[in-house]
Image (cartoon, rainbow over all chains, first blue to last red; front, side, top):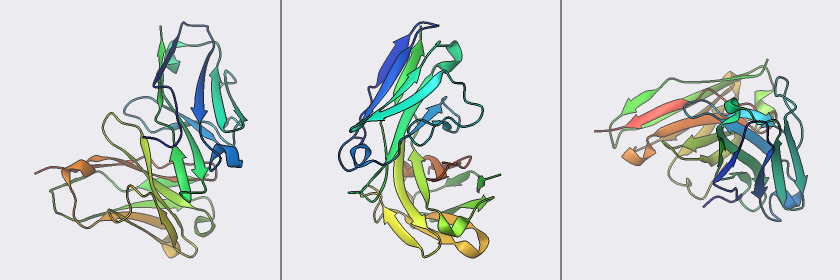
Length: 111
Length: 114
């Protein structure tokens, strides 16, 4: 059971907007620690999508955006494309564990 | 350019020992936490532990405490993950990563089979 909670799956049609949530607690997201988001296509290295809650690395389309509020964070994807079909993970730091924590991952299906 | 380059894939038998490596470049290796992440086949990402190479301060996930050893040699900008006695259940992809950035290595596939 992951410290950060993500819905197992989400789906949307091409062109639509989807959001993926990541729920933590007062010892991680709620304590103000940064949240990072990754996209992983099976068999490949996780790709950084969002760092520091809302920042996009160079090369990541602005269709991807991140936000954080209280003990939760969200990843929004607009203008859904077939190539967005992948697993998405959130990551933060936890002061109780003195280390990193991950969400269990959300599988995005583009219908 | 920040790079984390991991050692190659390994095939081992149960009970054998193993040490895999992750060499950092393009940043101050000694002053940035570096961690290890496990991904078992078809499963999610699991944090194993982190180390601060400057003073070797190491923290382990409770799930991995006592199961693996994390170390680092700041003189050669390299972090290590080692097992003293592998089990079939250690079969997985292992990634090293930094918190700043963050940056990830390319992964090391460890296969444990008799």
